[in-house]
Image 1: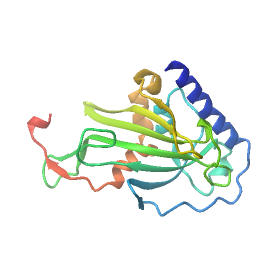
Image 2: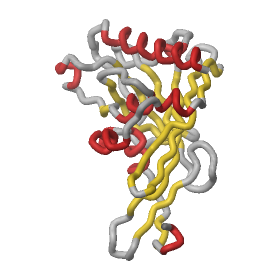
Image 3: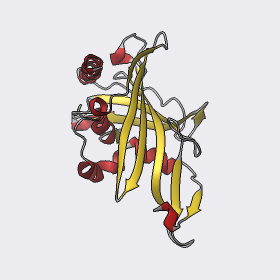
Image 4: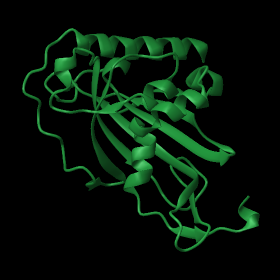
Length: 215
């Protein structure tokens, strides 16, 4: 497992370096409109990453929506099309959410949410790679979040699918390895850019009345 995590991190680093070593051309159009649904996946838009951190969790939370002027900053080292999958009911990957209102007039607050993010690495011209290997593959990040005083999110699983064969080529569930030394306090400072929270915001969640049984 540790060897897999090292290889996966190295491959992700390679993909970021590959992207950084090229200049932006005119980007290919986004595959669909933001919010469009393709099977079980909802398209969130194009995201960028400025660096690779010490865990997949921190890498995800620091992703930012791509803007047309972003390349002028010189800080982009990755570009991705991002999708999410979520079901309101259930207890599996991407399943389950709880949103409450204390009073009908109050804004809703989030108590728990699960989703799966699909992250497709893009070349400098904004197209998916048509090459085999982890560094070019499609990443699935299974995330779960919940409130116990402080809202915290964690990765449960990281998978990579080859972009040529479409076969699963990497699968990690080791909690410590994929979450690293992730700090929730740090997360609260950067959560606005996290695709996890953007996925939650794009859903029309069922709102439940709050009572003491819910905590």
